[in-house]
Length: 364
Ligand code: GLY
Image (cartoon, rainbow, N blue to C red; front, side):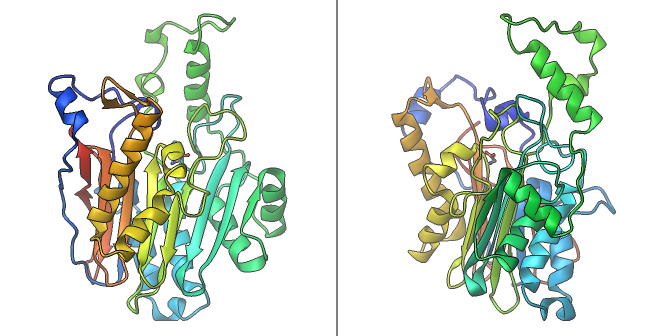
């Protein structure tokens, strides 16, 4: 996963060196890092925060794979989607992941609003929730929308009331650390308001750095080729209340087609939305592109469209975004716009997950 701060990860990429950029950015030449891998079914692929190298630390890809390797659990209805949702919950429940679930960074008013969507390939159903407050596991709510309603998308208070009706607890999601990060942002935000920031040496480095680890996406292909996926996030920090990113948008933040494959996104959601990101990656695989090529092709189009709106300053991207893809046969790949991100994967009978480097369009 990127080590970029949230502001650079989702907002303004500051790490791109100036030297040689004009030519580079005028004619991007995708540089594959990890090319598409054949993979062995079953496969679970995720954003980089889907696996951790620390021994014993729970991870999304291993949690999902544990369910997939349990025939009794997979025999249940929506067993594969349950695997994805349990994987996503690892980060939703982790207060140190400041862009997902508990501990997610809030909107500009200091309120945590969560977005999530899930999709189940065998029945081609989707469920989604947006701007959901006080419910720690929005992907679980999205799965309940899919399973227990005739709708596909609930937002705001309606989504909250539905989650409570489904038995999920009311939880204060703004942790003390996230509140301090938000407060520091609020105090430093403008010279033209009445907030005064404390001197930097009175503020812990971790609060000043505002380090976050990004939205999480999980895609899974079962031993029999069935497919499911999901994405969950607290979205862009300091967003205008009510803002939805790509994560809850079916076809943008995630999408799967049981005949083809699955894809998802993390990063600058607005760019995924206007390019139908995850749908386009799956569609590229349908047209015969390998998973990593499918991601790169979409990213190049996304970059071209962003330039039309002047979103690239001096030819450099002002944001980053990553896509993850797995094909029905177990092949998988990933790519990001600007070099530096990793993705998580576990496949076949591997005992542990691992991280691999995403391909990229623009050098760092
Ligand atoms: N990709 C997450 C968001 O933009 O909210």
